[in-house]
View 1 (cartoon, helix red, strand yellow):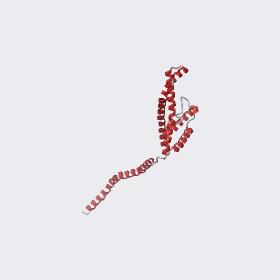
View 2: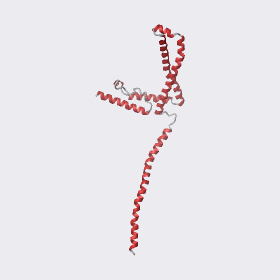
View 3: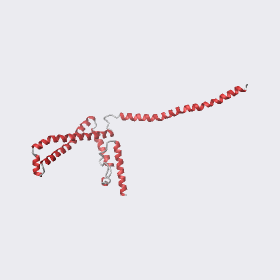
View 4: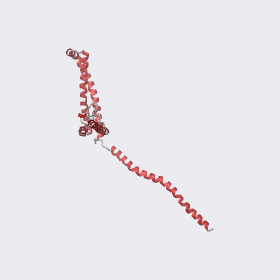
Length: 214
């Protein structure tokens, strides 16, 4: 009879440690999730800070990405102005050429057909108008950039950009039809990513040139 309580107590005390693995199993996922959240929290904060800094750039600050975007817009503006000035000069000059009998006069001098002379003169007038287009486009863009406060920044970054192109581009004397220099003047550069790719292309050209010399 005395041994029974001791055996029951011994059985209860021996059964208690069996609960510890269950507690450990229940706590492990919670601890792992807390560690995972603690590791991910700095990364999330860094992403949020970079996003906020990218969004908090003032409009009057001219970054390199904004500079390349403005160059692309200016190029499209010059192209549109070239088309407009070319069409305008043809519309204005074609009736004047027809009234002045320039086709017959040119045919007598050159010996060509008057229609051919008229076509050549019209094409010449259109080409002259096309070449005048960038002048109007640059003037309009300069006025717009001056109102936004970007004129001095664009001139400074453009000077720095062409200095970098002149410094890091490959030697033109090593160019050949089989191995041409990729984008010698940097006209295809439209972003910082394109500029880095351009640098890689110049290094690849130099490596290929050195291998051919060896």
